[in-house]
Length: 168
Image (tube, rainbow, N blue to C red; front, side):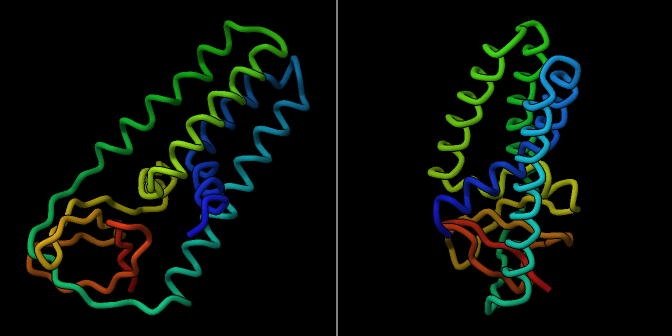
């Protein structure tokens, strides 16, 4: 998966923050509000296309999960960065837009380069859970819509160096 696509997935993870920005800027600068919502929609479209391709077009493999523990805390930590748009209500004008753009660009680069595609609150909203799982003696992040138990066989596709997505 290339860096551009990972960046688009990052945009999807910030859809709620983009909506908050749109609300904050609606009366002052509609262009920024429309731009924020457009970025969020672009990101959600990329996420939906990505999930479709992974589930339907990429050959899955069956793996046995020897140990499994739910780990949704990473996504909740990520949500802390959502506080930035609320602070933006204090900053007025174009300075706030530039500050937000810089903040999101830096976080986006870190997200895309750090293989963090599984840390996406939108995946949680779509019903996915995040697990810390042992597969073949190695630890992986497992993203799944279903409850996964130890010693269970699951059909997965690799979505990162140490990340599997469960597919049906």
